Amino acid sequence: MRDLEISNQELSDLAEEALALAKGYWASLEERRTYPTTSGKQTTELFSRPWQESGRGREVLQDFKSIAEHVRPSTGRFFGYVVGSGEPVGALGELLAAVLNQNVTSWRSAPAATSIERAVIGWLAEAVGCPGFTGSLCGGGSTANLMALAMAREAKLPANETGVRPCVIYASEQVHMSIPKAVALLGIGRKNLRLIPVDDKFRMRTDALQAAITVDREAGNMPIAIVATVGTIISGAIDPLPEIADIARREALWMHVDGAYGGLAALAAPEKFQGLSSADSLSLDAHKWLYQPLDCGCLLYRHPDIARKTFSHSDDYVRILSDDPTEAFAFFEESIELSRRFRALKLWMSLQYHGRRAYREAIARDLNHAQMLAQAIASQPELEQLAPVSLSAVCFRHRSKNNEAILRRVIARGRVYLSNATINGHFALRACFVNHRTTPDDVQAIVSEVIAAADEINR
Image 1 (cartoon, rainbow, N blue to C red):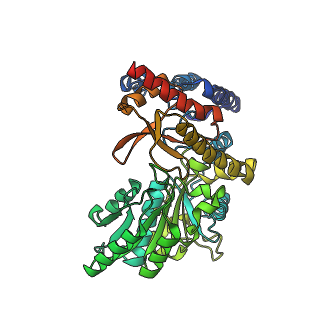
Image 2: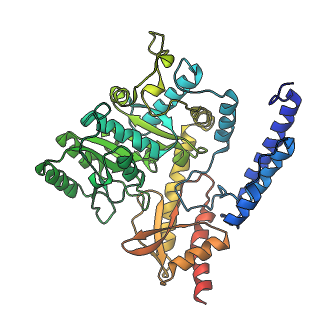
Image 3: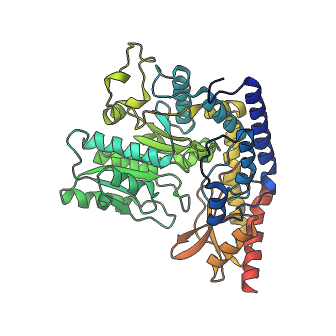
């Protein structure tokens, strides 16, 4: 047998052992600490090792057990960040995608995978109220936002051939860090990103947006795009989409909506997302609110011709030789990547296995859990909510002055994991619900753990 090949029996044994490890890990999630007791020194000593000349064989699988002790587990009590919970059918889909090993560049290279991805894109577009949009899967919202702003630049002030000319983009001061990064990478420059003030609900102020555009036009600057956010990363605020769409239409600007966190909640609460279908482009993360294993981002857009104008640049060796529109389709003509893995299979399997209702209800539970926490905070005189709960992020504090120490103690106790934010100058404790495993008891544990940690600190 040649090097790197293994027998069918050995493969069967390995697969059985790997599946047993996965099942054991999933079964143990709710017994695990919400964050491991580990250190950089420990993980370096455990996992930084030389690559040996001879292989270790099956024993390498047993490393999974020690790895699992030093990861952030997807328990229902992890509320720290907007990170999905890794739904198991999706994980099996990821395994099968790796088995098929498709390079989803085009229909010619990956016929079934390309058709499945295009179908899944249609499902997502329809689910968020944007039927007719097309797009592609990608690593995450950062890549999707970068591609969207590249399309905006090419639609309004083409730069691919002659280089970038000065232009201006507008976004809320609560915008995700991927937007300043994108304008820098695109050569637009962070100084040309106008951060618009927000109202008392942390939504972009459209009066300030219009005023900023007017000032730029009078100064001879070239506005090209507005970035609205549905689900700001700190408080979950939803920018006023209909009003922003009116301004974009009136000013002939590209309207991109960063929906990486909140967009897929339109499946459960469409009334919160009026105006979403007015966007020219929309980023989504299925590894957030469809609970898929990382990574599974998505860019949807209205104008495939603009995508091709932005991203098409092919060498002869990838030239498509078919006149059939399905068989001639190529993702590399409409996105950044050439090499692309079969991300769509996990979605294809998971969404069909559970059905639309199950996802709608899971997202609705997350939204309800956030409201439950807000009510629990209101019932405790020593706690204070610091921002409205628009989606599933809840920012609050203990009324004592040592919330940073309280957060460290909460994490050290290991029962729940929270993150932090700054709200109107206050250090805030932040809980975010994007997890199909979370229960009402887990929600109540947040309050009890914060109060217990504060009591320990203030003793």
